[in-house]
Amino acid sequence: MKILRLIFTTALLLTTTMVANAQLRDVTTVNPMSPSRQGYNMLVYEYESVDIRPEFPGGERGMINFINETREYPYHAYHKHIQGRVLCSFIVGTDGKLYNIQVIRSSGNDSLDREALRVISKMPRWSVGKIDNTKVNVRCVLPIAFRL
Image (cartoon, rainbow, N blue to C red):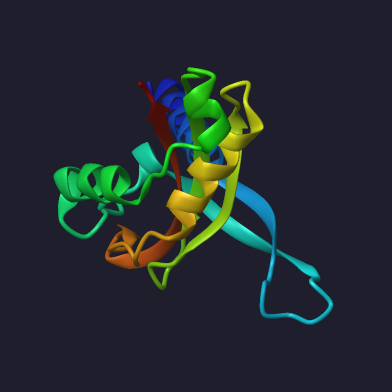
């Protein structure tokens, strides 16, 4: 009985450790203030794995309003009736600023991709994500749609 309990406890501990490691990433990012633009490593948690998730000021509705007010349809894409959706990724840092903004799935049009990156880079500071009441860096994924 004790052996079974020990095996079960060991298996549970290993599973918990593997799940925790799968939710934590080691991301290399560039410090924009550094003159040499040297990279540094940042430990980042996935959005679903934190206790308190980061949030745009004003919540989801505020974020949608911000995107709709800030987004400008690129001239040539508009006149060529090009539509699409850009899937972007960014990290909400422990200070609420957005870092490492990048396109993870392109719309197929460079001007739409650049505009999506511009909109996200203009966002104000977010409320920070927390695990056990400790501020952590959190990776978020956000789609930006361009529809006529």
